[in-house]
Length: 141
Image 1 (cartoon, rainbow, N blue to C red):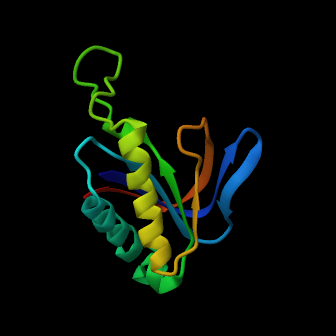
Image 2 (image 1 turned 90 degrees about the vertical axis):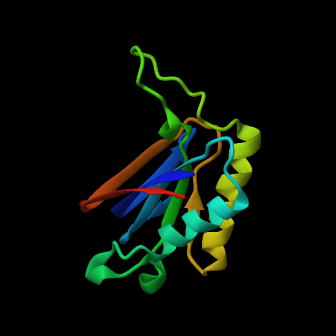
């Protein structure tokens, strides 16, 4: 599993004109990609990283600050662009594999007492955020 974490001062996800997740204080937007052999253990490790990385103000983690998190499934994180001009999506897991793993990440974050919003798996989403810092980190699990 892989994630792009962006520290944000505010963020929202809109699907079909409706806001499905948002926050208006410092938090984290986690774009999460899943590949074919990812397991529950990968999801648990990724959730720990998202929750415990000290990337918020005063070197606090999301757990320390009780900061909100928005998790958005992002199959494009596994794009292969080494050949030609058209990305290959072969490394991205199909929905039947990816959706449960993304749900596992969300569940593990919520088990830690965090406020977690989500996008809608497979939907066209408009993700808006104010990148605070900017701070953007790539995490692999």
